[in-house]
Length: 296
Length: 324
Image (cartoon, rainbow over all chains, first blue to last red; front, side):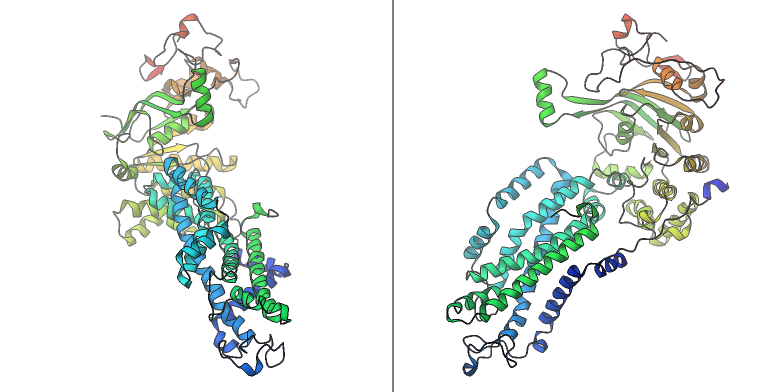
């Protein structure tokens, strides 16, 4: 029978999201700049031993507290350590810790949020009340309290930042789950014999990915900001490890005596990096989720 | 020989929740929407039973109860003598390979993140009977059956046309050799030129593979073509059941007469019956006692307030009307 096997009209063209994204970036210099800043920071962090002109912890009293010069582009601190080198090495901690925290928060938040949203009922109620209890604390107060309770250390810092971020992911995924769980493909997955676990994690979760990517990019920036704030307050990274927030704290005490560069340059590093993550996050949102375009 | 599928006294009520429930309690009204009440029918092997009725009459709820996407409130669904309405989760997962469903919206029923290969192979993998080589063979065999080119095997749903998507849905449904397939308005989301192709394909598959269909539709013409027997639903109940030709020639229930008289006939000189009902469909929260149609029926009598069972009026014909 010819009718049963005839092709049904023309096949629509294949979409290429990556190529579309690149074309968009070319028309959007701000996002492109932000992406370049992030890539530069990552490269600097990875290749710190080659990128940094000096050993970040080598002291040289003879050049202490020097302003910018060709020898020390961003000046030196009280101990004569080269500030540019310290900022470059600090990028390792400043990128790695928010990244680890984001990864942990994402995995925990997605797993719990997906199950709660899919199952609904009492489980959903309990989970959401717990989330609200956590969110009732201002994020920074929660982070400070946790950091003070757990003590310093990079591992604890990751936990602290992750805890402040879990509720965001959880609520995001739960909302997405509520949307996709009533789609016909969820029913179709059930009729062919999938169990709940496979329906949630194989069929539904992959359809919630775009907003997660956007949120992850944004929360890298927030995580960095949280860490820098904690370090500035003395609750995060401690000297002699270098971290941008901790460096601004050290530099802040020098402002009155006129050595402004110790405060300004690590501060600029924080500002540019956080801003870059936010801009890239917004650009990704525009690209992946056209419905949210223009919503901040 | 017993029928392949035997549905008896199937009911589904959706309990009200939250504020609507409180309001219902306060007013002393019902606390659940009675979507399907006491629906019974049989489908023999290789047969197509059409299920027609307007939107919201419970057709799709019946389909979802039979495929256990939702659990029925009461009643039995015997497939090959096994009551699938009472199976637990694990047993039901095994039984699913025998009863499959084709959904209304071909786009919404396909996971946008999976390729044709993964979607059509999945039921086979879950069934666990075939090796991966056999699964691939079966995949191509099914794709040939439904008229999908083999070059489409690694496409995503958005890379295919509407007709191709519905063919993928059908391929997925028949992959595990089910004996019974529920077709939930499989053509209503397709444009007219594709409808006939899909209908022909479904009929072709039924004959060749010996499938039995429950064909749900509000498109009378399609049902007329495909179904050997037709059941008419109104407000969650079956009001009439008859062989296709007889139903169209001599509808017995007033609702069926109204439904058929509303179908446009492409012949200006044809003598068509005008049989209008008055008013709107009552809310499924407040279904009238006795005959559910009595508030709208031009023939209504006092006796219509009495309960009205579906009774036999001729061999193979059943109707739920005191006056028929």
